[in-house]
Length: 84
Image 1 (spheres, rainbow, N blue to C red):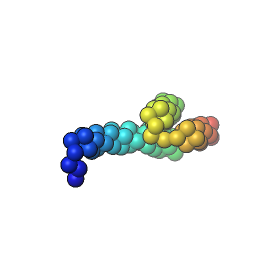
Image 2: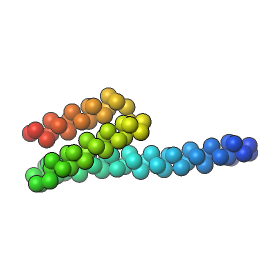
Image 3: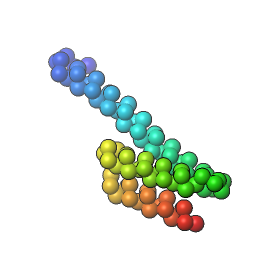
Image 4: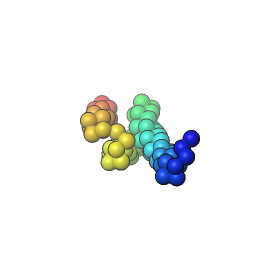
């Protein structure tokens, strides 16, 4: 446990950021999974879920949660799945 005041504050800040990042990553993963489940089930709202998943990927990339190559790879894979 840190003793210096600034180190104590950094620990609190890091924990807060970690919770925020974990929540945003979870939202991204959930959006992708919802799209994939709907596509397999043949649901009617696949296009909307695709748009939500792409948006979640872009949001995660802009926040630095995933790298640009992973974002473009995921988007490419989702687009292929949408076309099939």
